[in-house]
Amino acid sequence: MKTGIHPNYHEVTVVCACGSTFKTRSTYKSDLLHLEICSRCHPFFTGKQRLVDSAGRVELFRRKYAGFKKPAAPAPKAKTS
Ligand SMILES: [Zn+2]
Image 1 (tube, rainbow, N blue to C red):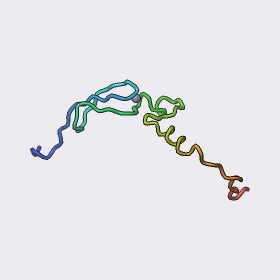
Image 2 (image 1 turned 180 degrees about the vertical axis):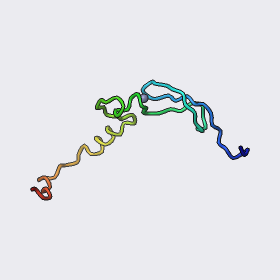
Image 3 (image 1 turned 60 degrees about the horizontal axis):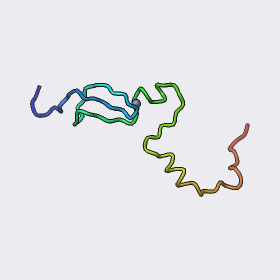
Image 4 (image 1 turned 180 degrees about the horizontal axis):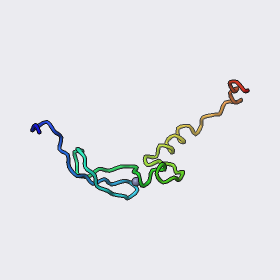
């Protein structure tokens, strides 16, 4: 192997916001990798409907559009047959 051109591939500990931890190998710069979501808590893997909102994005959206009015009539449907 040529020296000086390969990234440092080492063992890293992955820590998720849900509390689960596991080890993997990576070229990540640190020994500790923090995640917001992992395969233990993602709805795709758990099979449960759950809102993933670790950064408060939904709350921000609701606040932003709190005073936003609905249109008077619903938009006409395109092609009904
Ligand atoms: Zn998780």
